[in-house]
Length: 598
Image (cartoon, rainbow, N blue to C red; front, side, top):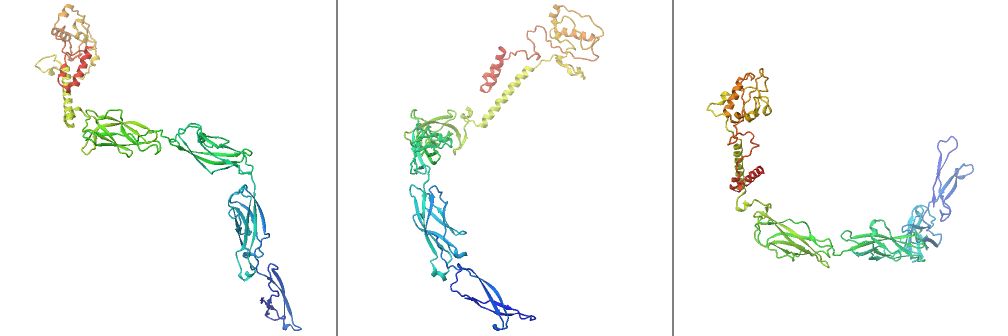
């Protein structure tokens, strides 16, 4: 093996270019080992004139570095190793390291570690750290000192890049034995099961045993264990546990329909070391008891048509039960046996948890009976069976021919006589018009007045209109109407109070006997003459109205004045003979007459 470096020498001074030549450097030793010596320095001398006397020479130093080849297999420093691991080590954690040495460098020193056999191959695993080229031992399964105190592993380290030119120097791997000692640690109690499922019937008495949990100290000391419920939630208060035996009992009465499952957590600790705790979940299922009777699934609105036929299904009903399927369906339907046979409706059990309501007879009438009540009995299949009674309300309605409901409201009784709605409206309008005519007639009769002046002449020719409004009924300044209403009470002549008179006339008294016997015609003439002779009257004509009809008339007053305070002699009892159309009017005037008499 050799190399050919190029050496150049300058000529004597004054020459233009150097003189170059080649020299070959070869190894002088066989099988040089990089691991033994990696770097060499060689001094090279060159002479001209072929090395003759008088020739010139020059020298240089050549540094030689040997490159690495994979000619060294990995080797463990020891054939036996021992490792201590506590039983409390967590699964997946690294518990130790191991390393094989390789004199090569770079990729020629890369290797892989494997566990080739041993009783701990299923409990431990090994991986390679590429940076440090170490084998990392990890825990695959939890350790238990009480079950197995030691494990043995055979670990192999092998190169990953092989050079077949040096395969005769192999094998390029090495094996060592690792013994792992499991250390004893004081552990918390261990439950017999990872979780528990228990059952108890609803409505069970307080103190009923639900089940038992069991835990023991896994250490060789086998300390006593105490139990308690971890009360993290309020529902845990439904149960209690015996601290020594682990027996769980009920603390309240349960209702499955309200809460079917309860989840609690039981904790166990050693008496000698209460700080070491272990927990286990306990799921408690509440079993069903047949304690709820069946009931109708909803409120039913049953309708039967007036033109229904016998055996016609008017409604299909269903029921529900709060209990589970074992104590609920199948449901049985029947009519209440305590009552007599229903002549109108019957019930048919369809044997599929439903029942049908059927009619027994033909045709129903709303005018005769618009609502029917049908008591039914529903029972479940639980042991013992429970039943409940319900009453269905059936309304009678008018329906179209295709079965559609038209109306369920009660109509007038006249509709049963075959009268249509239009005819009933016409009759009602006629009655209203007739009542209006009667009321108008009575009103006009009461307000009718007899004329005070009977003359063939048109009185409108003697009336002079002027824009002077009177004061109405409250105007008492013009004249004293009291004297006109009752002449016998007027002892003296009253003067007009609306105009101040210039000349005062002495009052003229009239004997009482003459006032009592005076004729109204003469009275009015006398008042007219006084008005004509009165110098204090206005310079224009005025109308004076006298509401006096005479004194002690046997016929009574025919004036409409004060008609509100007078009573009519009209007898309205004849309205009761006009038929039912005038019944309301007769009752109205009958009440008026009764009020007047009272």
